[in-house]
Length: 396
Picture 1: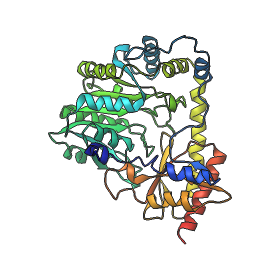
Picture 2 (picture 1 turned 45 degrees about the horizontal axis):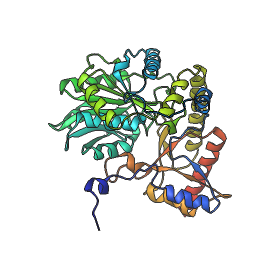
Picture 3 (picture 1 turned 120 degrees about the vertical axis):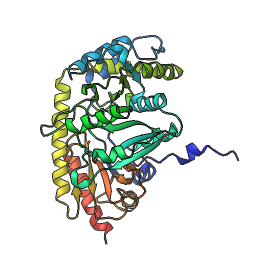
Picture 4 (picture 1 turned 135 degrees about the vertical axis):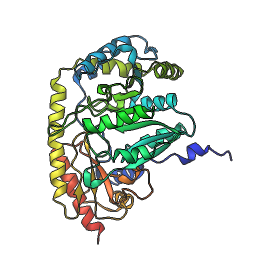
């Protein structure tokens, strides 16, 4: 029997989707599953985007430009101008979701065996992307007690080696919801300059910031034009995760040239999805205002209900639509699986993401889960009630 590659065999399993089989089996038994495991908004996608799909009139769904259409990139330039980010169309490469943008960035700046420094916890797929590119993730732990603020800069600097190619953060952060301050980002930027490293920032949750906190883009930092790589996506802000349209933005000419070659090898981003996303950029600003207001309500509901459960601690998120929750259990993987296989209340259960997969260590996060507060307040309240009931039954 042929043997698959070590790379394929050793890729980490997604903590977000690895219990999908158990969830499907629960549904097959007639159990309703509340999904708090994945950042799939239930808000309607913009009407303009849906109408663009319905009214697509071309006779052929043709290839588009590898870098994305000029018209779409021009609208993105205008969008970023509203956030005081000054770029031009040549700085933007449209990708098949932020996932492809990250993989392309790593392919452009790393070689086999290089290292990537990321404060942890971090979005689990970063480690998968890195492993697929032959790159090692070096996680620098942050603390639940500080709500997962940036680890001390000297600890980050101490991890830099001759193999380090980039610093990488998600801001606002997935999975913690932490929003990095101007001081924290500037410290990372100075570190990137000092050691001549790339500074990659995933900003897909830019709009979702709460309690008066401000989002600062990597493109706002001084003197980083050759070092900064911005990752973005249409998925979250416009509730269009399945469209798979993202972008890689940089002013580094060498990175742009290399990334375009990778983009040409996969031909182009999906034509109809790009058509829909271009229409979404014309949606009135009120769409995003309403979405932000709704997530503020959902965040309050999630935090309030979680804090009512004895033995549960929650890191209050400043942004995005996730929070990390510490449970009175030793193994959240086992607990999450048990919820789907052995627990229900009135024909309902819930699916959560065990947090261990958001850390680079084997034991970190074993008593935590990530919750995505993407359901409406009523469903969210019921889902957290199921968590409370599940914990009580599990401890018996």
